Length: 208
Length: 208
Image 1 (cartoon, one colour):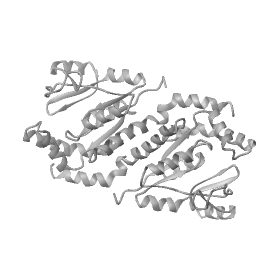
Image 2 (cartoon, chains in turn purple, brown):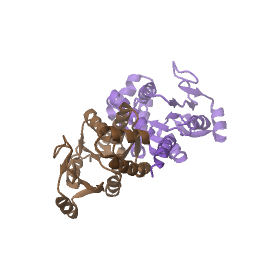
Image 3 (cartoon, one colour):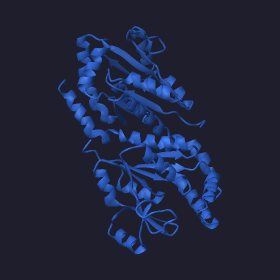
Image 4 (tube, chains in turn blue, red):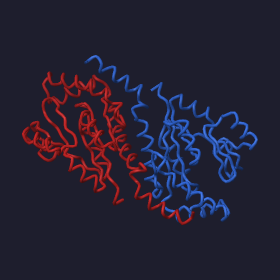
């Protein structure tokens, strides 16, 4: 498996879609996949730690890194910037390990352009009303912000067909199982098994 | 889900690859998928039942059905004919249920041409030696036939890259889990969820 290139798994969802819970469960259940920590200019929320949820950086640093083309993708969401560090991702993939990105729809589109082999998963809330009540229950945002998020979500959900897989997040256990299944299935794509399979095939050649 | 069209899952492997065990386990573990029983002109083996393992038919009937284009795919293997009945498959898919075909590489290629949306899974024996010893252990064939099968296998394994997924059958439990994962993952392709997702999306439209 040494020359195997890792799988780049991109997970996107409107905020409040339950993405973080799903991702945490996937990482617990499956080995050989690392979570790529994004860079952001937004302020840390209570309990968030630099280098764990995000790398919290200044706008100045962000634009500097962006100009140096250090980002695989970046997006502006509700006035804050978010980005994925290209080299970090490349290094892990080159080692043959899989990488998971938790990014928004704009970011997912950029990754698709730059790395067509990436696998894109969209997490769809089971309904508008459920998304609205989740956003209100987590009580992180003012009502005006929630309204903005719901409006943005109404745009974002339209993008689902651009993704490779779509998980409807109505039942957490089923949704986790589906995300695990996508990862397991994508790992056994012939192009990702090439070295292992070539070794097996060479044993068959003697018989021809 | 009523208008959903079922998923056509094609599983191929060189004989002795352990395909039947894998398929039996998949059908036990997952709902909503039917096994399509093939037609064959070969004689039943001890314990095989008409309408369970195969529909055993005469060569005359086979060629009659083939000329009437009743088959989705057919192949000649070691002097016997095998085929999949097109209407049976179509009827199940149209009902929104998934169908599993256990066919050889030639058949898989025909299905790919006629139904490009089918999902093709190749089961690869972990090595030539293991395949050889499995064929000898099951003691179904004369040594000459086994040698023919191994020679055919050496050709068939080269086709792995034409398949969507490749399962290396070295660990039964892992192989079953991979086959289940492929089925679950392919069920959440956006195009296969269209009706469910459209219903969800219509709830978002009011917000635009």
